[in-house]
Amino acid sequence: MASGTDKRQRTLTVTVRVTDDERRNLEELSSRAGLAMGAFVRAAALKDPGVRARRRPPVDHVAIRQLLGELGRVGNNLNQIARSLNTGEDIDLPELREALASYLPLRDAIFVALGKEPSGDHQGRKPSGT
Image 1 (cartoon, one colour):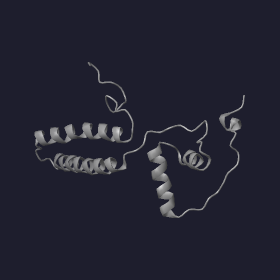
Image 2 (tube, helix red, strand yellow; image 1 turned 90 degrees about the horizontal axis):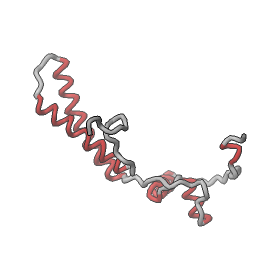
Image 3 (cartoon, helix red, strand yellow; image 1 turned 120 degrees about the vertical axis):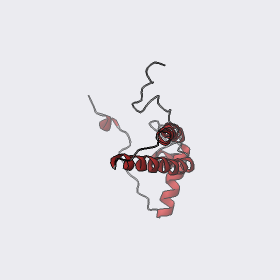
């Protein structure tokens, strides 16, 4: 039985030189189109991305940058709480609860910005008892 590589019909490579800016532009456009860069270039040049081209959910890059900033804020709060615990200081439980409660909505928003379905918990399973 032939492997996936042996079955491939696209055996030739076309090399095109681009600048850094052109490469970034191609990556952005292909991401917005939901295609791998090769499929995007085939679609642009040949008007057909090919039969194996899979649409990927487009990534919302602006939302990801904003969410990463928020995630950094939450991480900083958790780091300060961990440092207090490690030095034997008392911690503010409401502050800890707030930091932990901020994590899950951020995680879910990142999944949505990536075009994916958020899972029920960090293991990808639904929470038990629901």
